[in-house]
Length: 303
Image (cartoon, rainbow, N blue to C red; front, side, top):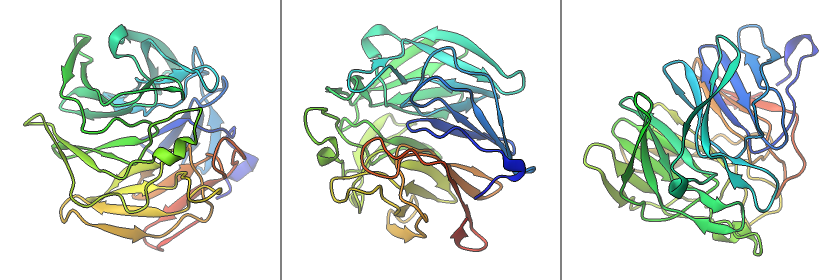
């Protein structure tokens, strides 16, 4: 879609995005750049404060009105470094702050993050950039007192994925186990792992991910989890597929495709519409896309 008044976002990949109210916040990515803010009411982009450091390969979460960034990377491919602290952004004040430290032994990037019962859960990821040392770890962070709790490991280690929480279950879908010396997308993960946040137990869903790929976007859409785009060894172009997993029937279905394949992007839902900005058009890091797609459920099509 085209924004009004000639406004646009700064293209990039491996950024995170999150919706707060009627605004979409596109944060970080390769290189240091200001936050890009899309106002869905005015259909315009504006800029917010630049992060204190380069932040990429993370999944932002909204906790009590602040945007938390935990489990990010900083630096250049292939030996990116895990960011050792939590960063928060206050959208009302347009201000960044440095939060608690992440325990040194549990630091990693390209991890999934979700909120549940006033806690933030950080899952999986990789410690040594795109080179290796991927982890199945699950940690619970309590923002109220800064404490960390180590929870049971996931059945599979993975990175380059998004975690999703639906009711009392944490789902891990897609991703890969990155190894820079090899074709990372050869390691795309088919298994869907689920963690019961009440019972603190893992299981692997019987029905695997139909089109294994990594660097996808993911979000909750009704009782379904949408897995959007991504990259894989099966094609040089980024995937345009969108697949929906029903958390009630435990079945997959095809969802309307994006108009342009993309990976290394994010997605957010505002007023029932799905916004997917940026990303890369081909497997790897290029081209960085300057477009944003929007899915309007009432029309079953995107713009």
